[in-house]
Amino acid sequence: MGLLNGKTALITGAARGIGKAIALKYASEGANIAFTDLVIDENAENTVRELEAFGVKAKGYASNAANFEETQTVVNQIKEEFGSIDILVNNAGITKDGLMMRMSEAQWDAVLTVNLKSAFNFIHACTPIMLRQKQGSIINMASVVGVHGNAGQCNYSASKAGMIGLAKSIAQELGSRGIRANAIAPGFIVTDMTAKLSDEVREEWCKKIPLRRGGTPEDVANVALFLASDMSSYVSGQVIQVDGGMNM
Image (spheres, rainbow, N blue to C red):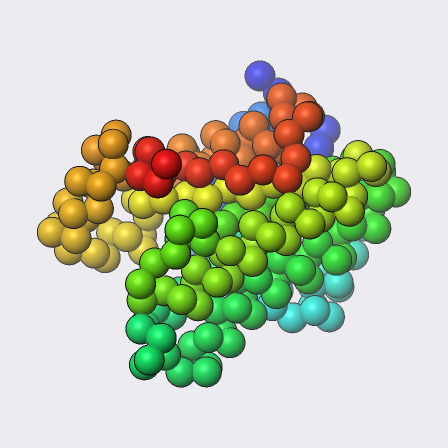
């Protein structure tokens, strides 16, 4: 359909999982793709080749999304090489779960830094570019636990709640300049991370989901496409839960 023809999307943590699914979806709709990861290894290089198969420009950049200076440098490189940054997807994230009473300061700091500060870093670096373009779509990958909380994930839940608040605030700050900001809150999505769970745990999760199945990365990518494209030109400051009805 070419919904993103001529646009450039910057996606953090897109070498695998949900980030990669979003990159592939965007490329299939004509977007050029720049993505970041801590290292550009063989897996990331394979992702580049998969993206280029759609006839678009694609490149992976080794960068620590949680580092403010590195982020500014890589965003400048991407702007120089691609010409524009029309879509920003803040997808980089980690988990270090544990009950509050047993959680170390290091566990808390690591998750908040990678999950939330990285989004600040990239929004801060990309905003001047989008302001000059007078348009842009910023998408923060949150989580249903950022909306409803989850025992044993206070650090992750706090970081994802922060992603929601950040998106809503940016939507208010930049809306008058043609820049939209939204958040996606996935529920139980079948990825390499969730594949490590036992069958019993996965079955218990699915019992809580009205659609009685886990979601796929493509389910999330479809919503990300909607928010990146002109189909959502009047949608900003919203949180879309992709959870099969688990949390209504």
